[in-house]
Length: 201
Image (cartoon, rainbow, N blue to C red; front, side):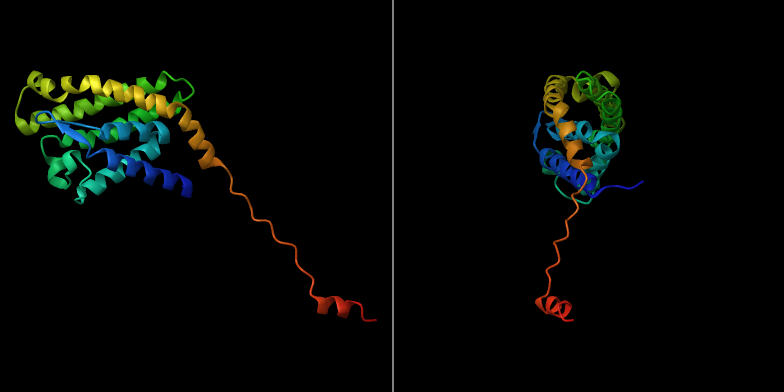
């Protein structure tokens, strides 16, 4: 399947957006409040399941090799396999599920918060399960640390992503699918010498 240069460009651009938002975080305990999920929301709503996941994968890969794009401006594999690494990996299914819903129901504005809420639920599941494994805590204490503190702000992020992406998604598609204009060939200028030769009888 052919991938257009414009699709690759916007995938890279949205990966960069996640990289910029990811380090913006506020430590409130073992798990920090981060704007990284907002970047994932925007990427998955605008690009859909395939390119949205690709943008997130680029972000995770950049962080894995050491770029400080994760929460608290950290990077490296140690961050991914650490107690909060489940959220980083959970960005991938979050983007996929959100993208699936939005791709199928993109003309309905309600599909955006529904898809984002479903993706966020899976993100919470990955983050909580990994935190429980790494920290050895039970489910209820883990939910108090990994889910409850983030519900209000994530609700605001979902509203913001919906408001931003609902119409922007269609504008972006027009840009990606717009055919390139073919360059018109300039009319060939006649060489005076050729004209003189043609006039010779």
